[in-house]
Image 1: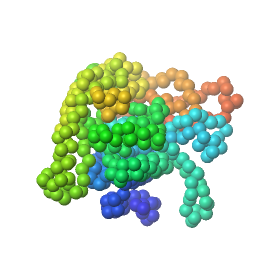
Image 2: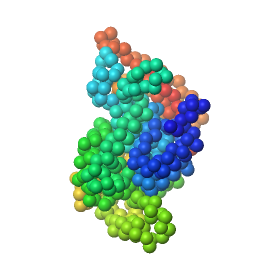
Image 3: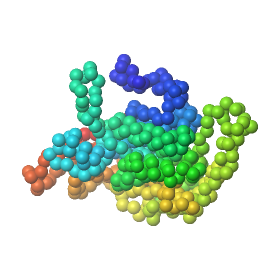
Length: 436
């Protein structure tokens, strides 16, 4: 346990450090973290980097973490699960059978992501949510609560569920492969690549345990599955994806230099050898020397252009991408991705994807009024609109009028209005409103 009851069970730096030490000391194969909160900058911090470099990369622990419950606005993922490399960030999904069993709903809907589950992308353009897992359960409760079972939901439920999937995969791998270790990067590749598409942002899908296991077995001999990929868009923020939010950013076509670098797992044994003369260090150096990928690059939307191919060795490579958002509809969300395929096995699916997100805002004229027109909603439907904040504006007055001829024949509807504005190096909760 890393929570401290003296501060409302919140995690503390000391508790987090002790948790990392325990993972390393006991050689844990998997770990879950359902704590998290908004951060001012994504993918930074001593503890986050310690987990990514020491726990995951060096000691081979699959680290799973909740993405947060601050949705459905964009860029509402929490740290570390929804913002940091090395972690598997998990959102909350609910199935039709779950609704029937758990919620006693008058009217049900099909399988869906919980509307309150946090969404990406991160402020620096990364996907944010890697995969979705069941985010609710009627589960056991501590005796002092005076109830045996209780319904709970949240990404704090979906994250340990996904961690259990990872434990099954690691256990099966060790059984089938004679006790061989399994790279956390290989596990994440299998889970993300085989997730069932559910129409969510940037293709994050619902975890499929059996498919992930079949993927691991099919590509057991593929050395490139051992690596993760670090991407950087070479602008002032060193972003991990392309994220255009402001009006001036989508007013003309833009070019981006994108760096792609493979990240190799390492081991404590190689580190203790202090040089590359030892056997473990020699094997790691040889793996990097032998690494090469001839990739085919594909942009999923016509307003994004990339080269046809890219050769990548162990030190990485760069390519240019062009994004022309000038003809995209204002006020709406537009997404694409740059997918890289192994030219020798396209059927494997993308070995990495670089998200491209454009929120082209509506202009506010001299009347200081924006009419969004008539909006129609179905249960769980999320309608997104984006408005350019006029210089000097400090607040907005929002008027909603409901009209439904069939209102008396259906169950009452609950609407949430979720508004958020991002500022550099500022937690999103500072400019955040969620009202019902």
